[in-house]
Image (cartoon, rainbow, N blue to C red; front, side, top):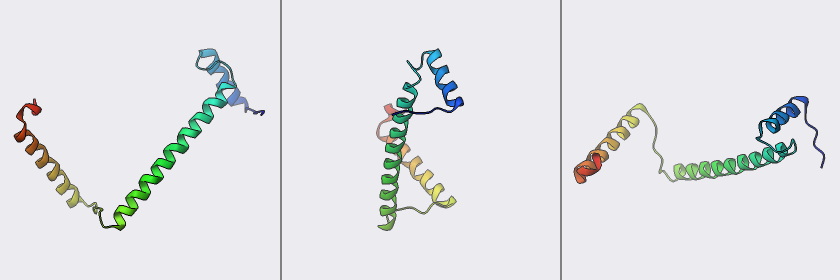
Length: 93
């Protein structure tokens, strides 16, 4: 396969070789493909998480986010933290 770099891409790859980050300009293509693959994996994971969240909401398991609900959540977290400290005072040090 032959890949054509733009002049900016060639200069970027050349600087990477000169700095020792890459062995040769062609390595830039391998690095780019690896990053593209990782981005695709992360996107797939995000979409799966989003699907799970939507399904959870459809089952009525979600929480409506309002200023009041955020205050309630903060209060719940504070109370759980205090309960842990009471249960195990050594953990708060």
